[in-house]
Length: 122
Image (cartoon, rainbow, N blue to C red; front, side, top):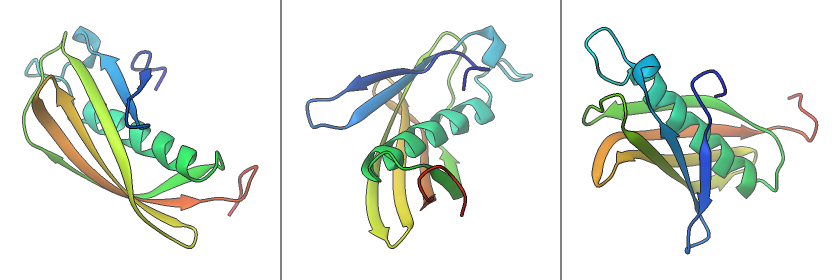
């Protein structure tokens, strides 16, 4: 994520985390909106960090992710992502996320994450 800007994290009162990205002109697509890849990348990062934390800080990798864009965002927007583990089954985790600009939901994502052995590998 360093390539698209710093990612900010804040622990919420409920124990979860909110991840934020301050967007700018570098995040714009050809029509002047925040590129969908930036939004999906923020969702994936939030999902991975929540899964990593839930797995006891053991590495996790994204197996599959589906993103539904529900609204657009303009450069300059502060995008915030929250994710939650829906279910864990063996070494697989199922995680949901939402990316918002204020009260507006910009994207919803679901992912399957694989918990890897400590230190990487399969």
